[in-house]
Length: 135
Image: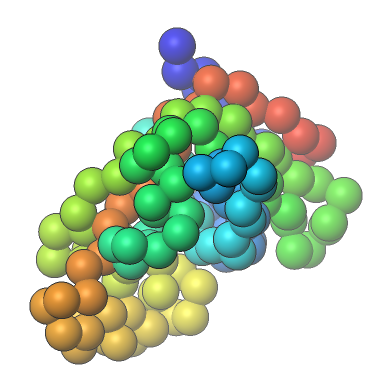
């Protein structure tokens, strides 16, 4: 069952704050990656490249945890625990959208110039639990 994002959690996720995505390696050990994040409804979306360790981990075991801290006030944070799906990023739309969110206008041009064999994917986390301190 999915859980809706609160307004304060959404504020942190919609700002250009950096996230740390935790997945599980095949041996059960944790793996973390620093990521850019966005939202789509109550889901959290992350862009990545097919074949990366975090993507392979989520394709095998969809359990994920994402922590995002407010860069303006590090005491405010949100943690999203949920299940992830991985799909192709058609037209690299999410990659461009997040690059422009974090780097400004034109920031996504590099993703549009990537060769076709560099397949971009969307990691979509559907929250099962939302924690943190976002007053």
